[in-house]
Length: 358
Image (cartoon, rainbow, N blue to C red; front, side, top):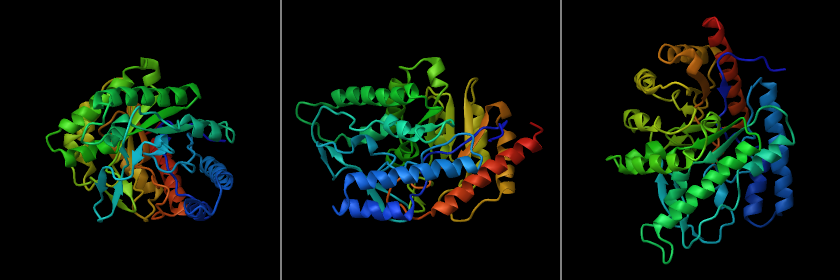
């Protein structure tokens, strides 16, 4: 039985896949494993993930994205009108990720995130969080040159409708909270230091979020981080000061902010404090998924106590900085390390609450 915590704590999303699933994904990609066998292994990994999170005392569970190809591309799995040569995202260690490029319209999601939520619900009755990709990320699929008979404006209308449906279906399926992954927010300032691209991203996301009621938006959140992949990031060198004031314009009730891997978190906390408004909660990152060093509960406690000097406790929560394996082929962090970090987050948050007399 999980004891209620006075400071809420939540995972962000992805957990490293078991070795057997990693091997199966490689075999499936080569045509040596059928869809049914892969799905069976994904379900087994999901069941194990949910059970282990529950054993660690997590008050809110996630499926660990065991069946997602990546946090970003799940909606377009199987979409025929894509060219693999799309936008390239460079990381600090030199590796890159490449998005596909849309070749024709209309744009439609092929997979909705509530599919994963329904699958997870069959294996637990605990509160379940569901991550979805922000529409701003998928806006990068549209090519620089306009498509014949499908202008960018039509694409953005279709994208907004599809993103709304993705979120709404998760809410209707009973998600405890629906989290929009917005890792491209900080990256946008690297691509366009003027901030125009970020403004476009915020406007598109708010176009979608504005379609929900205030009560619904209390169950919506947005996650920001500098992009973690293969123990590297794409925008950790971008100053948070340019992002956070605009991030807090988003019409959600929850913000999940990477903080543990910041060299100097206190200036970031001061900016967050300046942006606080009634009715929102800020979950600060207290574990760093891109380092193999496992935080102690005491280190987590101290990070929470620092945050509590700037953020009222009734508006404070904790999370991991980002997902541990947002792309299915990322094996840089072990499954055991991820669970150890999560355990430290849960225990350290409880220690902080105790220290604060909550």
